[in-house]
Amino acid sequence: MSGPSAVRIAVLYPELLGTYGDGGNAAVLRARAQARGLEAEVVEVVGSEALPRCDVYLLGGGEDGPQRHVARLLAQEDRMARAVAAGGSVLAVCAGMQILGSAFRDVDGSVPGLSLLPCRTVEPLPAERRAVGEVVAEADPRLDLPRLVGFENHGGRTALDDGAVPLGRVLRGTGNGVGQDAVDGVVAGRVVGTYLHGPVLALNPALADRLLGWAVGDLPEGDERLVRLDEAAEQARAVRLRMAGLAAA
Image (cartoon, rainbow, N blue to C red; front, side, top):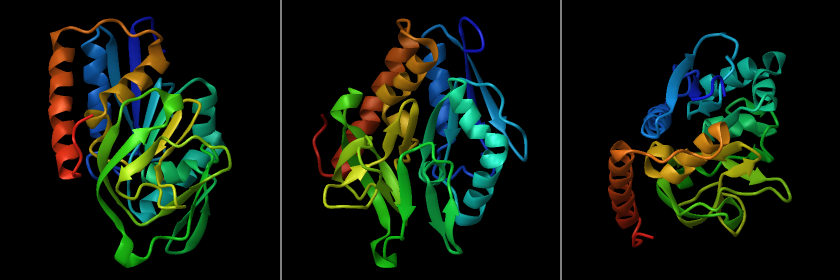
């Protein structure tokens, strides 16, 4: 952390990777930190700026051209790798997850990734099978998280390396779209990738608290603001689960 009670949250290139409300993940982290009596600052990294020293880095979804450009920016001087090595945790959504794998594909072919996640985005889904809709996943037991909900809108298929830990096993939706056992996302240390939009942290507060916990250690008790945030999240989760044809769990 940057101070004894401060959490710095970086939103990386929101002008390029900011589709489907992913920028809201920063607002969720800040609100949940403040509800626990922690100072929290959101920093937006734009253009060709170097990455500041932060506790949590957020990458969102985006189109092919911006995705390729961000991959080049984060590869310069090993910016993203250095941020992770310095202790920063990362939440990378959709295109962001693909960038952090070993490679991803766009209309021009294969693009090298940053190899911070043990995955590779391979040939795309057939156009008629583009993954669009609600997603419900049982979090991998090793992560000790409740059921995950969100929505997806992507045409990529992401294969995990042997032994990689997925974020969750898909009950509804497509997720990574590879193999008979459908999974979503991948986790390596404090780097989390997922196809879940929503924004994902608004719908999955336990995942938000996991990212905050990686930054500050044991989280302090929250005040009434945290109670309201949790209630709103549970209501939203219940709606998503009904839309997916599943009961709340």
